[in-house]
Image (cartoon, rainbow, N blue to C red; front, side, top):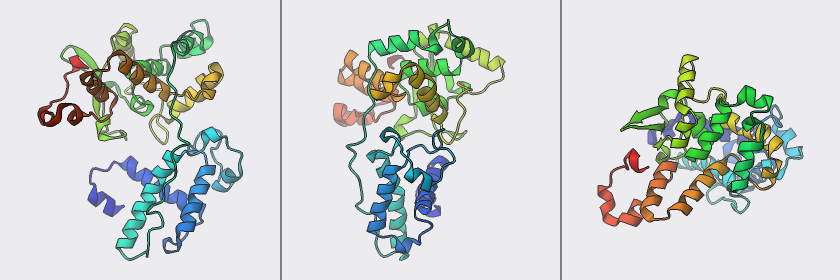
Length: 327
């Protein structure tokens, strides 16, 4: 870990925590092996064990269960590790073994060319007009006639869904927003998504960005909502979505177990999750305006790598960031 920090001094504590968690998981699954004893067969066995485990061990169904209990449990396929996530967990082990080989503490790296097919990693289905209409009219959270709306309407979870619809941001990015991250410049309010302080993380460097507050959010009362939070002494934009192991975990758990599974059960069979809001936002933006210049702006808004060079060629070297008005 010291060597890793020496190579990348700006490595976030959360990333180091993830790195350590993979090591501890491998350690627990094989009952503390000496790394010199780890071979290709054991590395393959690790993959087979991961295929049987739930990707989120902290959620209600599996909380407190040991690895041995999880390996023998009947876990639904939808909860298990997918190929993409398994490959992500192989990388730290591959890097660690590379380091051991360089320091002559291990003869060969058993993870060096080990990857699994990502064919089982399903993309999230976008939402149709009928899905959005049902969500915003026939679910407890958005139906004023229900007691659930009385308790939670126009509060954290209500705004969580609205923000997802009108920003296309990832659930973790929304969850880690603080009131001070809602800023104002050039007559435009915007969300500053970043990874500075308070345990914040972003998926990639491109995810650090400024996302204008959509006019519909203003009309719905976003600014008044923020003022009410300030008066109540809150600092977080969505105070009910408290951080668990990672930003967004509690919000995802609420959406899946308390809203989708109870009010929109068919969404689960159709692979519609919280991430479907992002898929819908991006898909509809592309369908509305597919000009290359507009797609570059969209990439900046949603935190994807902007393909300046592909479109602008050598002129890309002179490109500045887009002003808020163009986003």
